[in-house]
Image (cartoon, rainbow, N blue to C red; front, side, top):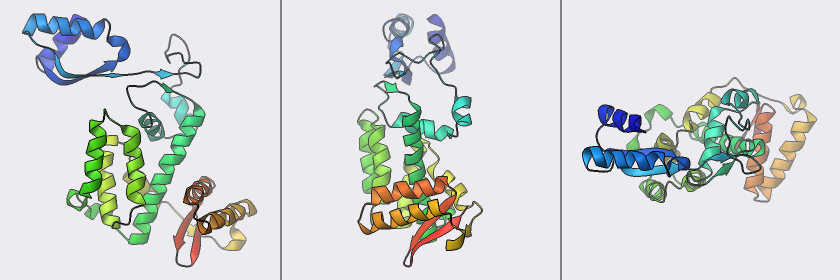
Length: 261
């Protein structure tokens, strides 16, 4: 264990701010590091020790190479997921609690992240906001205060994700919403504005009714009913299904506009 204490003191300092590691390092490895630091420098090696729990499989076993129950990032990408979908998935649980990995859970996270990106893209399109002109001074202090509170709640990342949707559904200006989400994503790092810009810049053309397949028209009708009934959660999920099929829906005063990507 001496190499960690040696590398830390040589390359950083005798005492660092945050030391991370898995909960399996608590009984021996990190305990020895602390003892060595006290012996060498008369103080603890870190101000804060942050220990993360493990990814487990469906049976509750720790995911590890030795158990041959891991899935590699390349395999996740081959299945059609973005690495940011996986990052979002991990953020839905607190770092100090185990998370049971499943493809279904990852799919749900993909849809949730895509829903946020879609809302941001629509907000930019409907408001004409220029992302390059948005700065930190445009942010909403009340929402950023909430975000800071969640950070102090032992990194309450699931509440942070919910806060993004709360901002998007608020009645505040588009510029302020976008600026606030950008500041939050500087911490979360799930590329929400960057990917919404990619989506906004994708090749698309308005589709006439005769060009829209019947299965897509059926989903559009279901979405229209959902919006009329005020079921906006269902409406958003149907919009994401349409996006998966290659059709982007924009709501305006005349109803639903359909663009073929």
